[in-house]
Length: 134
Image (cartoon, rainbow, N blue to C red; front, side, top):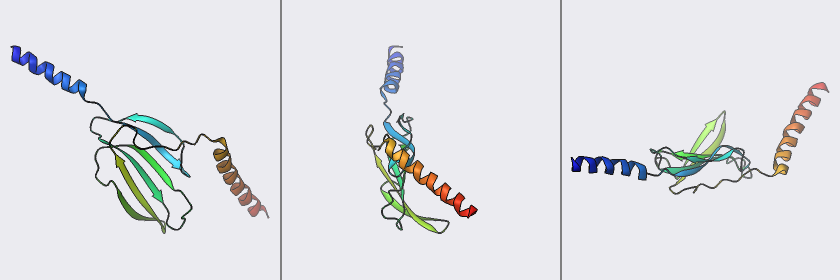
């Protein structure tokens, strides 16, 4: 009976001692700035944090898009893959790491960055409307 009780206590203790990795999560990043950064406690089957980045070779000054979060394993990590969508070529690269918050996020806390983007979109809409009227 004592051995059985010891085995149960050891099993419960090992489950309690398992810690999950904490990763930075960003569902969408534009112009190098994360629009919705949060910390994510990964499920027990996830062992790494990742950053996925899409860049466009034809636009070298464009920072591209990022997503970040938890990943189950390192399959596909540190690999760049060329893709094409609607005739536009872009590269995706996934980098991985295995310690808490090891995938840093650039936050979009600057109001000026949001204003610049809003002004650019607003200007494009205005030009489009004026172009159709004239």
